[in-house]
Amino acid sequence: MMDLDRVNNYLARVEESEKTTFKPVGSRLKVGVDLGTAYIVLVVLDEENNPVACEKQAAQVLRDGVVVDYTGALRIVRSLKEKLEARLGTELVNCAIAMPAGTESSVKTHQYVAEGAGLEVTNILDEPSAANAIYQIEDGVVVDIGGGPTGLAILKDGKVVQIEDEPTGGTHLTLVLSGNYHVSFEEAEAIKQDYKRHREILPVVRPVVEKMATIVSRYVDKAHTDTIYLCGGTCCLTGIEDIFQKVTGIRTIKPANPFLVTPTGIAMNCTLE
Image (cartoon, rainbow, N blue to C red; front, side, top):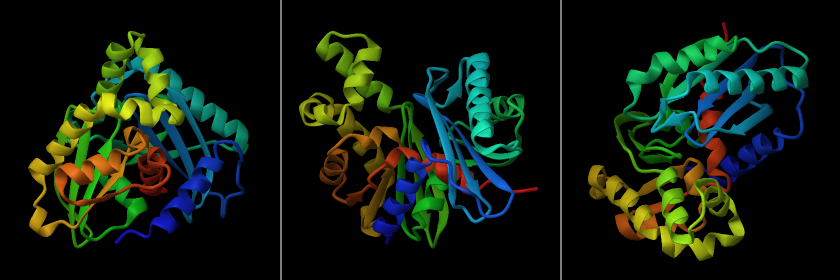
């Protein structure tokens, strides 16, 4: 069972590192580069995995986990790296990257983006496995819902035994909100991210969330799964865990800040050379 207090306290420190630069233990730094459909995030940890600094930027350079604007992605990663280096007063060298489940064919493009920004990629993993570096669960299902796909990893004895991916994610929620409120995609995205409006919009997006939960149900063996662990920016939606639990019939939990789980887990998996 995941220690939710430990996870929440750790992620709160990562969130704080967006504004405060923490002094690292040792001189070697780990970087996680998370190329997301809605955001690009760089997280820096020290060699003991203590949070040091974090930068993020909204981006529309990926679609369903695939880079569709290489130049734009490169520009953003380079800019975030430069901001972090200015904050830290040192060059960032090594990084890890992660792919949404089922998009392994795009690994090279992700790698070229990181390398083009001046980083050396020392590890590549899938996003649900990266998330479990934070959660540290032995048995259960990690469901990572970003802007693009819904990815899931089934874990047995601490090892990923099955990875699945379906192209339904946060972008679909935004499109539904855009149509319902007759506003632009950007305005709908802002509505989705406004926690004060979550209770209002939940009935509007519920059918899409139920579809995501149904996708997970298709792959999960209820008889041998007692908990679903959510992460990814879309899981910031208040009440999403209740819908998942109702549809799947499996207890579903998420941390206070599911958005930072995957990028931080990616950084944890950075191998220092």
